[in-house]
Length: 312
Image (tube, helix red, strand yellow):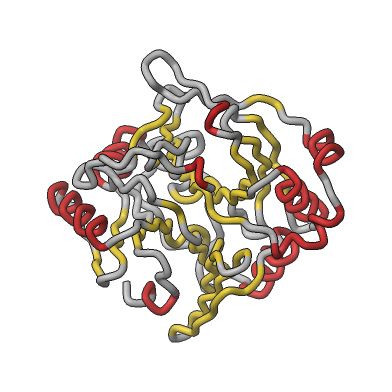
């Protein structure tokens, strides 16, 4: 969506991420691969994009069209998601219009394996929240046009959590044709919202090191950051996880995937990681590092597939 990218071309990529940075498929470690594949296929209308076996693990990618949106890794021996640990708050799937969003919300709400959490008008977007069968948070949303976004005098983007009536939204925007054709309607990962132990530490890693730019800092217990002037590509909160230490090995979030246009963007990221003394892995097409709580973030070139990511 063109209005999600700044029109500025003088961004200093040695300091911040390229304005054409975006998000890619989130990786989830799952206990029941077939259950979770079925859920994301039926409830969110995602279709298989790619699959690879890696030793005893199966890596299965689902998405809309050729756009990956979730990567499931079968790891049945891991303990269940702990909602109070650092890790995933939700993966946010972005759709192009209200009809497409309504069709997906309708499918998710109909699926008995979903848990509906709520819906909100965030001023910059309209969003619906669910939890998948293994406890991973999901947001389904659309953006308002950038011309409708407003800013505080200090330049901070105005975001809020206002009531959005889900039944009224569906009555107005639900279209049977969109429900029937949902797997063919565009979608992508718009942002990823994380649970962390400390906001200042999160800012040091996600903003000062990775290179996202802060967009909202006044929201209680949370920080929102993005590239290219978007409302947020990543968010970090301490609402359930204040003061926690590194994550245990368990089901749930395996990797937060970010894409940048060119190798020079990866080189600039490597320089920032070195400057901050943060360890990293570089495969040539991707650079990965872990935040202070052990959450892995992988920044890749467009088109990086499962085979490339298995090298990390």
